[in-house]
Image 1: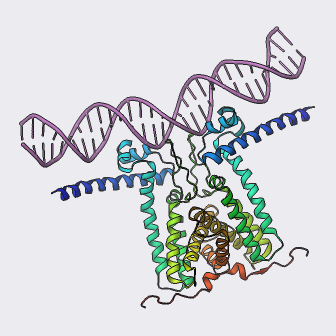
Image 2: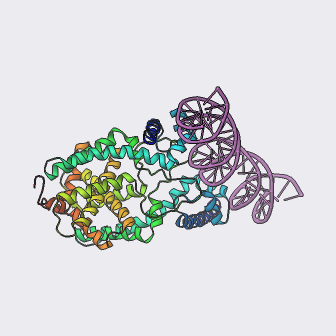
Image 3: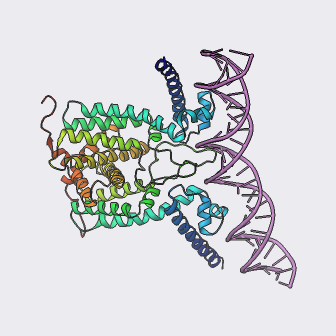
Amino acid sequence: MDTTQRTDQQRSADRRRRELLEAADRVVLRDGPQASMNAIAAEAGITKPILYRHFGDKGGLYAALAKRHTDALLASLRAALDAPADRRERVESTLETYLAAIEARPQVYRFLMHPAEGSTGGDHGFDVGKHSAPLLRRMGEELAQVIEERVDLGPESQQLARVWGHGIVGMMHAAGDWWLGERPCSRAELVRSLADLLWGRLAAAGDRVGGPGF
Amino acid sequence: MDTTQRTDQQRSADRRRRELLEAADRVVLRDGPQASMNAIAAEAGITKPILYRHFGDKGGLYAALAKRHTDALLASLRAALDAPADRRERVESTLETYLAAIEARPQVYRFLMHPAEGSTGGDHGFDVGKHSAPLLRRMGEELAQVIEERVDLGPESQQLARVWGHGIVGMMHAAGDWWLGERPCSRAELVRSLADLLWGRLAAAGDRVGGPGF
DNA sequence: GGTGCGATGTTACTTGCGGTAACCCGAGTC
DNA sequence: GACTCGGGTTACCGCAAGTAACATCGCACC
């Protein structure tokens, strides 16, 4: 039958594809985001054109690779976000999950944050905006949705939730990136500091004594 | 005199350097972050090797270019941060300044956020961490310093201030980036939403009715 | 006044990468 | 047995970063 046949081929193609992705994963893990197509092909035991047949171009491969990791990370985050606990606990455990992930596999993290820009080929639309890593966008949207579902924000709740979703994700990302580089404190301390920030401690704190003029 | 002579040469070299930077600026403004050295050289009316003599490599040129813009933006931000107003006002005006800047010159902004990675040459240490744009790091440190100077955070104030500095900058950046791409609301609304977030409105809001089980 | 020398500039090259065209071969089919 | 078709390879193009080697102008110095 046509269907069975196509399914068979599809299966084999999918398996190949997964193998290639695993190889690419290994190389990216080893060489960072600027892993070359040659290197990936070599690691997979084949040559370049096959990669191109499967993924179109480098962007395609990178997108496929990123999707795997992004999906995995998002699944963990969703678990933390949806846990049946109070809000502060959920926030902290989400932060904790994210930071643990980037700490455990910094190369993957580094890779995910780079859209693999720099295609040589002819055109390149150069559209302003949407320069951020897709991972950040997706996390932002995800968080926005959870906020809107679970927090009562009155009118304009949707817009507020989206702003906050992206803002909080950006906060987490930037702080995490800085922390990974400098390691100025433990993960738990970082989590607490960020949660405190979200809990309005900045607004609540008093002015420092000895201000201007004293 | 040796000094005068060297100063003379230095002067001329500096002027050339500035001219080259202006040309590079024009090209980056036009072509985005992936402007080629050839294009920049052509715009400046010269050829590649001169660029390399002046800036070492592409990274050097991009760093010099980024420094100019970063310094300018940081100066505006510092003015907003140091204004003699209450904290909420200062926060809002800083957010406003940043967002107005990225809105006014999105290409520059886009360029600044890209470390111009992708050097072809042999090695490349691949040091994990410090992948973020230098602009973000510098803004984070700057903000941390202001927070520590002006807000009373008790013990561990320095560490807390640094976490918050980088976190808030990341929040501003991510939200700004998303906003630039989608334009879901006015700048003023965005500023208010972000300030509200920092002011603990997330913590203060109640749970949404109709939660799990209802 | 010739002369060396350093800054300024050029052409022409190398290397390495993304991407592609053209060829190749074994398996299954009529 | 010819035929096509999916998976594979070699050899190539175009392009950008970076460099080596050559040309030229101004200028102090004897």
